[in-house]
Length: 219
Image (tube, rainbow, N blue to C red; front, side):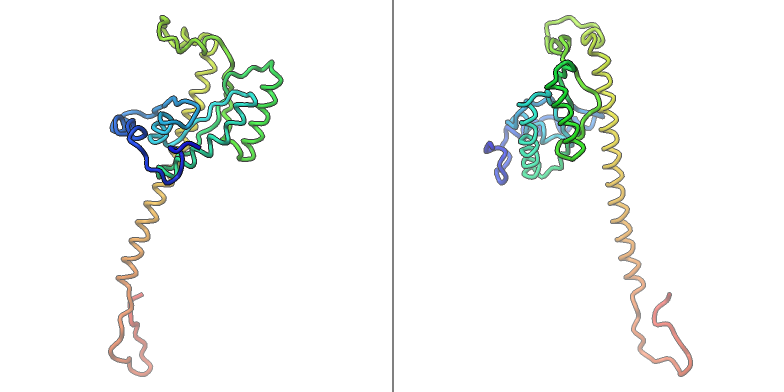
């Protein structure tokens, strides 16, 4: 565990720099995706500090699978130290080769672990290992449209995007409902407190006549 990931260590300026720089602009967008390195270094922590959720991309091989749980533990530790609720949005399988028996086996392990709550929920969309995806980071390439850029991978990446949006909007809706529920409960508790105060018993200073019953406070 790096020093930056240890509880009790104050967040340093390199970690907070991204938040200080762009947090004011985040409300202008419905979704903001931050691509972070596969390790909990300064740049990844800076991204997490701005995030409500995170995605876990996994190549279905042995070493990648072994690295998932330690990363999840580090993110949880960082979230506690940062005082933020950063929840996993899901696990995305990338560079999947359906002809590889190892990939197929690791995929089944991920599905089983996801159902048991060991890993974040697995996305249904599997991102295959395709040349257009590998070449998509080439900034010197001439691109006319996203369909032209990604070729055969365009349909898969479109499906992944739709699945992401549905999951994010669903979680956002759950959070909004929970927040509204908390507000309603707080308002009701406040109203109930005022009502109880207004209906507090009045101490009778005189006793009612025999056979006559008077209420010490209104019903």
